[in-house]
Every structure is written in C-alpha cells, then in structure tokens.
View 1: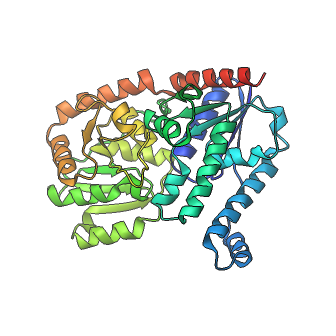
View 2: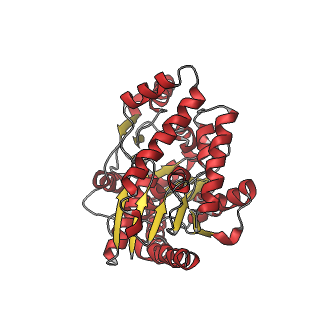
View 3: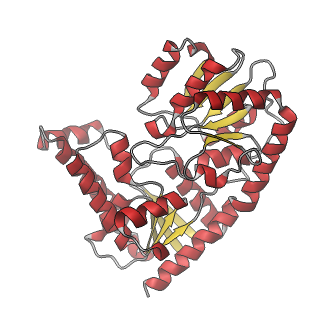
Length: 376
C-alpha cells in the first residue's frame, strides 16, 4: 500500500507529531509513505497578496488559503495517481483536490475544527468564518472516511455539519512508546524540582493557568514551558507581573530528543487546556508522550484529555482554568513520590496497551481498507 500524507502547514505541534508517527509506523510495516507540505508562506507572499487585496483583510485571508492550496496541489498532482490512499490532516488540504475531481480514496483526520480555531485566534469576520465552515463541510462530505481524534470532535461534525456518525471513526492519538521511554539517566531534582508544560502558546492550551498556579506553591518549585506561539510575550508579561518570572522558564520550541530528556527530569507534565470559542482539547499527543515516559500528567478535565486519563490512576485531572487546584496537585506530586511513581507506571502501561504506534496504526489501517472499499 502506498500512502500520501499531506497538510496545509508544516508547523510544529500535534499535527506534525501525528504525521511523523504515522509515517514511521507505516514504513515499519513495509508500506510506502510520503509526506507533502506546501512551501512556507513568506513575508513576500503575504505582501503580494496584501497589495492585491489592500484594505480587505477577509479577502486577503481567503487569497492566502487559495495560494497555499494551489501550491500544495502542484506538489501532489504528480504523485496522487500512484498512491492507494490520500490521508489529509485538515479540511483545506482536502479542498485542494475537490475541484480536480481526482478518483482517490481520501481519509481525513480531524484534529479540531479550523473555523473554531480561527475564531479562537481572532482571525476573521463572521463572513470569513462562514467561508471556513463551507471548506470544512465540503471536505467532510468529500472524504471517504473521517478519523476523529476523540468523541468531542466527532460530535462537532455530526451536530454542526450533519455528517452521519457511521462515516466517522474515533481513533485516539498514538505515541512512539519506543522513543518516549522512562530513563534513569535523567534525575528529578529534589531541591529545585520543575514541572514541564509542553504546549504551543495559543489561548486554548491554557498555559496562563499553569503560570498562575505558581502563586500558590513553594518558591523552590519551578515551571518550564517548552513551546512557542503568539501568546509568548503576553505570558512572559504575566509571569513578570505576578513576581514569579525567575521561576518560570520559556524554552521555546524543542526537538523530540530534548523533549524526552526534559520530561524525564520533570516532576510532572502539565496540560492545562481551556475551552475557547468552542475549541476543546483533543486527545493531546503531548499528554500521551508524558504518560509514555512514566510521568504523572496533570491535565484539564475536558475533551479528549478526560478520555485518555483516569484521575489518580493514570494521571491527574483538574477543573480547567482552576490555578489553585492545579497548584495543590503539583504540591502533592512533589511530596508523595512513592504514590506518584506508581501512577507514572500505570500511565506507561496504559499507553503501551492502548496508544502505542503499533496498536494505533492497526486501527488506522482498518480505516484505509474501508476507504479503499468505498472507492471501488
């Protein structure tokens, strides 16, 4: 089987981890897999589009989307007839094929609704958001089979777009458990422990809550944030205003090898997501990576997080946005190492049994077979 994996953005984060893990798993099974992204959007491209649509920001966003779709299609068109499955990671990627009427089975993984993401980031008027919803609707209808990464994403597609439930398969995210492994080479500091927040710095990821939690815990405990994004400066300012900037470290983006080290050295992993404009955290890959290294993951009790973590058995759950409750769990973890070690072991076992790449890949391959059958 030959699979073409594609997305409209090569950005770091959960989608990139998903594609990389899928490619590795497919190749391990002796399938052919190729990843295709469009070229990066340069400032010159933005300037040229801006000149073309001066004064009309909504039209500029649409023109930029169409430019990305056109460039992506140019890279896909010479490959598409040679593959058995086209696996898209967002609605705009499917959109680059729709007008070309290509007869190829399309599997679409929905990590989250792009229209709600745009609204969360304050990008676009109601008219632009309507355009994005139409892009989503066409993609959902065109796809042979849809993979939702948790039941919340499936419900959104059924409720907001009228997609039949039987077309959508819920497959929780997977993790490379052979890479994200517990290691005795990296020790947790007993005098100055830190908690790690491996999050892209956007509103829905709730990093503000983790920073606010530092107000309620002892000064020897620190917070390290591995990730970048548009919220970075605002969050750094918040740490300064709270008088805790010396205890909060912004690491920026880190690669997978460094992330494994950071997770192993941390007392725990924090995934403090919050609902924003209908965007709700899915089955976070960062949370699964933390569980895979045998660490206690503290996550908000929302969306896919509460579907992959069992409170006080394979991790800890707290009410989204409740900084004081989060701080209490952080203190508990630091002062109860034996109990926490057992929870970390449970988390690792849960990942091995339910979310390792091999188990995850078998479920994805079943979807591929369904998609091919529908296109015969």
